[in-house]
Length: 166
Image (tube, rainbow, N blue to C red; front, top):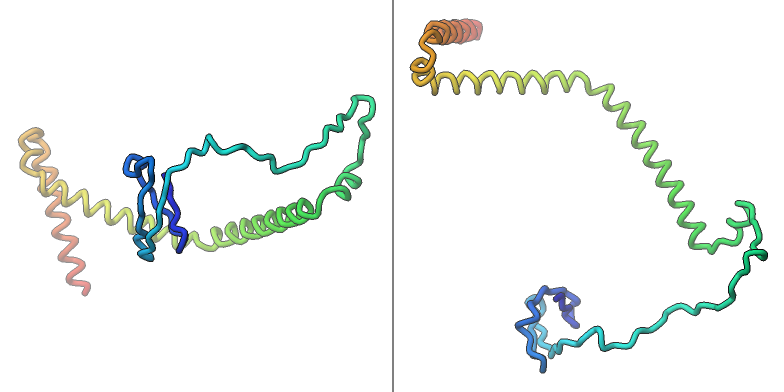
């Protein structure tokens, strides 16, 4: 059950089995306020009706057809404000969508380099994995020994070439 401190309004989730029927003192962990809390049965409280409903029933023959303009004029002010806010939010969403699509067209070069970096990292990880599992792979597939030897010699040559460039 969620209990709210009456002093600082902080909410706590407390197990109902910890509170006896007679109630008990509780202490807020935030403001150290102590208050007495008793579990109240919410079903025992009488229900109250917040709205006044008229019993004016409309007969099927008395229904009037209104145009959209007349219906909007009769709407409460709060509904009109909400509709205006929805229109503004829709316009803002469409503007953001346009700017995002423009940004995507400008960002194609950055995407290429991202893919290139991912490819390089994946290739290096594959080489490290092959080097780590070289002996078990050669035991299972004996013909792969020559291929792995050539691969590692080629990588060694590339490494030396890059060092010579620097």
